Length: 289
Image (cartoon, rainbow, N blue to C red):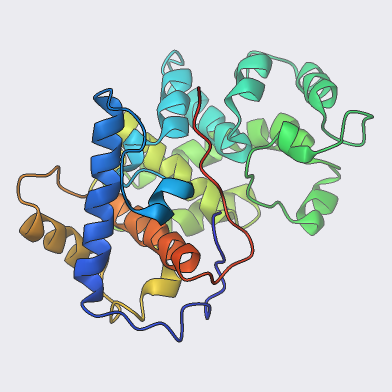
C-alpha cells in the first residue's frame, strides 16, 4: 500500500471543496491513463506528485495486474476453478510466479511448494526477500497457520485453499446479485476460517468483471483501510454520492462504479499523504523502457 494508512495522518489537514478536489485528481489520473494508452510520451502530467509517485488507475478493470489476472483466469472453465485461482492470485499478486506454478488444480501441492521454494519461499537459501515470491501480499495470521499446522503462505495455498474451494464458491453463488457485499465477505471469511477481507474483496471485484451475472458491478463494498482516512475530509460522503458527483461533474467521462469510487478514495489518500510529506514510505513511479 502506498503512503501511510494511519487513520489519523490526515486529521490536521483542511481542504477547500474537498469532493471537487478529489474528483479533479481522479480526472487527471484517468487522463494520464488515456494519454499513455494513446501513445503519448512521458511525462503525461504536469502534477509533480502524480508524475513522481506510483498511483493505481481509478477504474479497477484498467489496473495492469487485474487485467493480467483476468486473462490468466479465463482459460479455466468451471466457476470453482476460477474462484480457487483468483484467491491464489490475490494472495500472490505476482504474475511471474503464477505463470511458473500454473493454476491450482493443475499441479500437485508438493510440486507447487517446490517451485515456490526454488523462487525463494519458506526458509530456503533463496529467501533473501519475500517480495521475490509474493508482491504486496496481504498478511496471513501466524496463529491461523499454526492452527492449520501449515508453516508458510505457500502451504496454505497448496493445501487449505483446495479444501475450501467448494464452500467459497457455494457462498458466492448463494449470494448472486447481492447489492451489498458486506455480509458476503463475512460468510467467505467464515467458510475460510480466518478473516481475509482484502483478498476476498479483490476476488469479488475480479469476479464482477468475469461474471457480472453473479457479482454485480454495481454492488457496494465496505470501505477498506486505504479509503477510510479521507472520509472525515469529505464529511463522510458515501460511495453512491461520489459516483453521482463524478457523473455530474464529468458527464462525458466513463461513469464510476462503487468499486471505482472506493479506489479513488484510496488513491487520493496516497496523493494527500505524499504531496503533504506525511509519510516515510513512498512508492516511486519507475517507467518501463
